[in-house]
Length: 378
Image: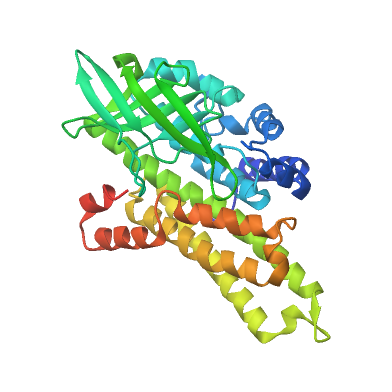
């Protein structure tokens, strides 16, 4: 594995660092977090203008035809600044999946708009919470389908212009659909995620889906969803790496300057050891994520490595995220001080698309050869 970035990748990383640093200062992020449906519209347009929204989109649709690796370099910078924009959900979960489906007409219509920033796609999947809710129900009806019920957590669904629907019909066959936000029978209930990002759920009432909405079915849909899940886990690892790196960097600065009993906090052994433990967990996350990313890039089976990377997203996010918060003492609880946001973003990544416990079980299933169980776990 070659850990060096080529010239193009280094240029993308440098450009992303500049864009996020210039537009995402702490005061800007604080103001956005206080808004009901926070999204950094100016940053989103700048990402579109600079071509970063088209990194993983084919050149025939106006993109740059690059890979997940280049997008991960941008996601690390997003994590470093906690910028509220739907890079992961829009590009990794939706656009890349749409591009590999069977509906070329939808690709020609939507992907150029994704590149320009005019189209924002949000993933919609089944609800798995504890509340009583009508589950998503898809049934065939004279060559079309009827959709009812409530979705699960959907990031940036209020800002979305369309949805990528992951559904299973009445006989258990998986399907992937695209549905425009303006279609009749759709109600979007806006909420906030635990890290103050815009989110919510979508309610469907007798929504009709035709062949023109279909992206993939049966085995093709199942294969696309497995690939989507692996890419999402890897992208979450990139985002989490940026979050925890910057959180720990700020913590190191704080404990170097803050004094207690006449000494810098960082000079106390308990503080330095806990910071060192956090650093090692972040490096474990980075190693696992690069291994999984290399598998994806080389066309190897990333079933195990992507699951291990997501496990470390949760494990490092939990321990390093708490370390970042706790070593700031009381100021870590102050909502006017930015460090608590790194903790909240780390917790959001920890639980999105699988908790550490769930991923440990999946990794166990893969190791003992029960991959069918592992693939259907989430």
